Image (cartoon, rainbow, N blue to C red; front, side, top):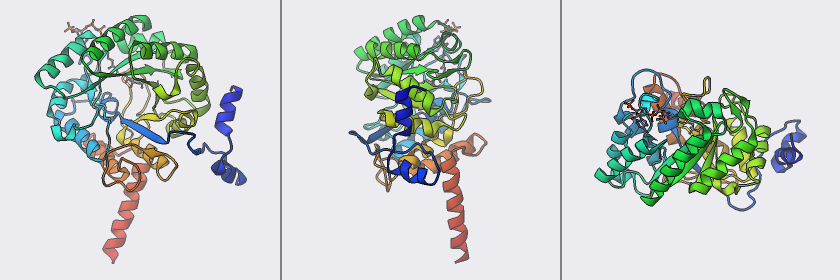
Length: 360
Ligand SMILES: CC(C)(COP(=O)([O-])OP(=O)([O-])OC[C@H]1O[C@@H](n2cnc3c(N)ncnc32)[C@H](O)[C@@H]1OP(=O)([O-])[O-])[C@@H](O)C(=O)NCCC(=O)NCCSC(=O)C[C@@](C)(O)CC(=O)[O-]
């Protein structure tokens, strides 16, 4: 681990000092140096659902999921993908989802959709011709290793960047915002540990082509905070950390710790998935994104404020209790329980409260 990474991870604060007095080493929440607003991009309806096996989840369930997340205060919700339905069957019908979202739920809300090539963009433009305003944002995506690029996009990194560049230019000309993703930023399922200088190169190229922000995908979910910091130090040699977002899968349970390490480093936008849903179809064994509930709870009552439009939340702009309920609702639709640790704790607390009430 580099000297700077060690400093960043062990920098003493009141919290770490208190904990270390008890022999506990923690990734603490430092007092914000400047900007203390954290943005969450909810990726459950896209990253969360894209890997579901079995029959395609009906559009009305996806629409209800998105509308409920917006109602809970989320202001950026990834709504689906314009990718090949042969490659990712669950994302077929994203156009139907977008056009079914009640316009009153779209006000001041970003609903980005993944677009990998000109064909996907043409399909989106056709939708926008018929239903103007259904989205104002797309996301383009590239990888930091050749093997992942081939598996995910069926082309080399250079070829993918050329396609993404054309898509970004055309989308920007049409007035859309473009977000970028760099995948496999720490580990690659096919090549092992990723070379951070490649992450830097790809990320810089995505920003140079016109992405307003690049989300760094820890696709495999096995990265640890010190590895995330080493990667960030390398990327920050060429890129302003304010233009980076963290996208942590939680396969090994390090998602929250990685978010805190990246927050400490200066990142202020994080992707997460309600109920911890998800996984990438081309990242074997990877589980879902870090759960939105887990991020919200971690930041609640801290010096950071989560941006959002909730009018009911007691802390932060996204209502944790509502998100927890949504996590359970969608997980049950998929025939399972919510995997969010916080979602499970909230449900258990509510059951105890109900039991107590019924005894009174
Ligand atoms: C990019 C392609 C299409 C190349 O796939 P290809 O097979 O090389 O494409 P092609 O241009 O040769 O076309 C083959 C067929 O696909 C069709 N096609 C071609 N493009 C489209 C399109 N846009 N929409 C609909 N259909 C399309 C095209 O029309 C043709 O149809 P046919 O003539 O055989 O009937 C394919 O590899 C693909 O769709 N990949 C998507 C992969 C994907 O969605 N992965 C998951 C998202 S990325 C992710 O999860 C990571 C992330 C972002 O979350 C961050 C992280 O965690 O790291």
